[in-house]
Image 1 (cartoon, rainbow, N blue to C red):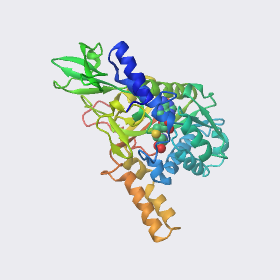
Image 2 (cartoon, rainbow, N blue to C red):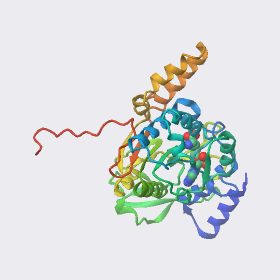
Image 3 (tube, rainbow, N blue to C red):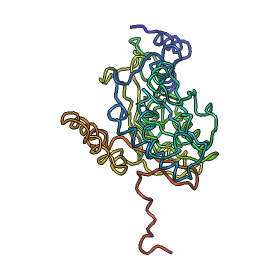
Image 4 (cartoon, rainbow, N blue to C red):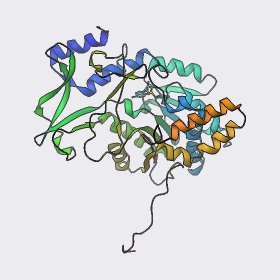
Length: 370
Ligand code: SAH
């Protein structure tokens, strides 16, 4: 096994010593010629996502964002955007749902798709043929056309992370190096990390993950919301972690977990559980309104996944209706995707949040000063 990325990374490590996990990750997933996302359309082959499970997912996201657009005064022009659109399915389903609000499609077009992968873009081009779509490399590249209404599903989990280990009161960074047997793998940087003081208190031996790339992504969305208004929905597997996150890296190929992905750069999907804490903090620091993260099951129920499934099932034969129900169940069942996946709602400062989140608790606790 000696793929081009393995050779490239090996040469770099031989020349410079162990590299940071986020650099290794960035190369594996996003190297322009040989990265995992540059060379394939992995959805379906390696993993499956909510919009690919049921059309109801994208429809409800579309309804939630169009309601946010209505609640913010039906601005025109405005921009409907998605970062990391995968096969384009969520946007196709959301676009259909926008039809319920007169004027929404006209106001929100052209749709802005932010996609780094050329192979994904060409798939999206076919899937979304006939829709008013434009592609951009980053959100910064998309022209600012009024308030932004944005969704990103399973984007943050793909962004690079760093890992640190807590030992005898100090933090040490895990880097990718070459072991005695000649294989690539994780090893500890012997120098204590300067990040230590910013990391959570936790027992010796704990592993903690941070993702500067996720915070940069949150800040770039926040900047747009602050400047122009709008709202965003970020959906991913993860939670707000108290203390250390542990090692949550997941490498997958052909729907199977790969235990040692280091000698397979560019050939396996890499994700990790999203720690929403720093993401929420980045939005709050910019002054944005934030709701959640709430479990995906609760969010989809609040938006009416059951009546929507019921309405669609009425027009189907018994087997197709049962299949549709089982797909909706998979999205909301706490034992499947309903609890592990979370939805974070964000709005521009002082603007209403998209629907689907519990109302903020404004009750005054007993005994509190009025
Ligand atoms: N949202 C889709 C696809 C999830 S897979 C779905 O739910 O089905 C991750 C997607 O994000 C892919 O399309 C990948 O090419 C894209 N992507 C990953 N990192 C990105 C980045 N930094 N900017 C834009 N797109 C990115």
